[in-house]
Length: 282
Image (cartoon, rainbow, N blue to C red; front, side):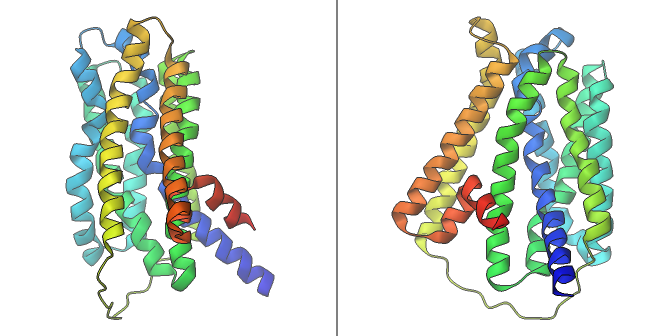
């Protein structure tokens, strides 16, 4: 009985964590292949191609805000299913599009799907878990997202060497996430529990500001790396994927080192993907 309960808890945790993979794919699945994509859309300017990376975010933000309102009227599982279907169809479907305008429309729908799914990836942890388990899973969620971003940058860059459209197959992971959610993620029970508000320490605001700065730098690198390597003949999509992955690894290694220096185990869990994954499987 205990073994069955433990397996069920593990499956539930994996189902929740699988949602964290999707948020990073909007950029990492495409960024290494920008140089190759330019050949397929010669009529598009470099600025338009760079906008393609961040275009989903323009729709992710409003739908992330609306996601909270959706949960008041619809079940969270149904919102997840809808968002995952939109994510899958727009992400994988864009690999078959030859018109740049239609491609951008699908990128917009990708952002809508992300906006419906991403906020729930964190709220479900709060709904389904409590105490230390909740705190650890919040950290594991960041670890999964970071590890996925590094891995997919490498894979997408390598696939783009053969055909940049193959790299968009990464969005097919949403089908696996859909299956995990369908079979292992229950509808969370509504709760009338009052949450006591606590004042956040200044260290939290410092980490948030630094994270904001690192995201800006990451997007600058992602937008320019593929074109820079192509224009200077220093490499192709594979090298672009390696460079982007290396930056992400260095960024989170810095967080890990800072966390150890500050002596905060929770920050270590949050910003060190490898350590978090090892701890998870123990």
